[in-house]
Image (tube, rainbow, N blue to C red; front, side, top):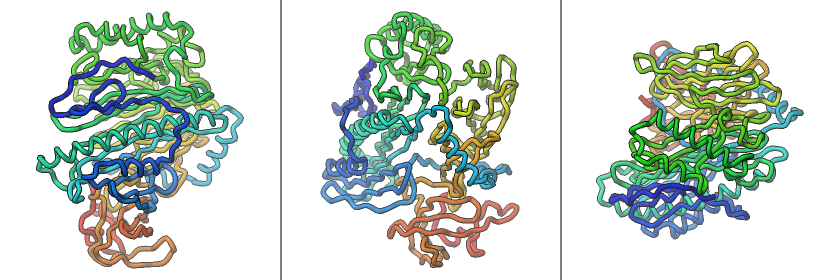
Length: 594
């Protein structure tokens, strides 16, 4: 697939973006060429090892590949050494520390821990055996790598790479195609990161950096925008900082035919390509002019008109087809990336019926302040700013305000979910302030949207959205502040119910999350045997039920176990007690946020 994107000039400080559309890595002639090569199906861990062998001889590379399911592999080695592996009991994802609120609200775990796990498991089984056709199950995961100086003292580069998998009965071709595409993407990304690490080592030598702070960084993030019985759409954001005032970023997209696994080009989904281009171009220019005006470069209309010559960046969502323009394409870096959604109501008549709306079961991203066609009529998720620059979130159905969620500091993401049993829901999250997220689930009925679930401390960020299982991020304060993850299903009564008792804390390369024991710590090992961890033991917290048990892994031996704790009372409710002793007496430092 080729893209029409304007190339930027080389920055004197080697700022660059690792991406497809002609962006140049500053100071080196590297280009990410993302295309599908059928037949490339290498194991991801093996590829990580291979990349380690190709890394610069002047650095030690520490590789962390953390798949979303099953045990993970920590691969450690230099360019000259074979890779060693250690089991980890966590999966991967970006785990930026949340800054929590001390508001006296019910936590996600307090709500979710009361869920009937057996019922949740039955709900999953019911979904799998439902007579209606299910959309593919889509999962997005993240792998991490770090590069260090030759002596291992300086952290010089950090990178994250998202990947997607798709499966489900009847979607074998899609699963194979997505796997091949992923491996091609990851191979190119990690290879280029390895070359960037060489420059990072050179530049870091001239910088006065803290040993625990990396210099260069790159990431490749994926987001599901649409999946149903016909198409899977993903948008990918690629970012790199390689010195200078700021990094650069850009977007690509990929759209799969879920039956054949083929990557769809824009013309593949058109009934009348010429009519679509004419209508879409007029709509794009109208919206750009009204929303951006003087921020746009002169002659931006010509850029819009020229995008049809090759493949633009596009993806489907619940309400229409979205086109994305990167920084410097239509406006300055300060203007940022620009995305415009052409509603199906505007352009759907020129598209094949299978692609002009969400068909059957599926999940599609919803834009705010935009009408979305549902089986119950027109739905609109309104986000409006008040006089205090706070955002009021409300839902409209067929032009009538039906529900007011609350007022927030920022709004997150929103999805329309159509289940195989005919029910429809709107799922969205919003942030009061400083990562105080709340996730809402409204059922769309013939009368009005009905609130079915409100989970405090839960977010869609870094999670997975689907019609069978939803993986959501949970703010967890247990022996540190963590992003934890839990799978939920939508129960018969419409509530979100967790499927497990333990919230999973995904691991990354940050050393500040390691807890160093300062006095004998009573624990229970996985074997069930009571034990004591002596002073000097280093552990990572890997999960918790948020109700008295935290799970750990010994950073050096790999052994696993659990720690029993109790919370204090009243003003002391934020302190945990282990065997009656404050948590702070057991560890050198506990990575709580705030």
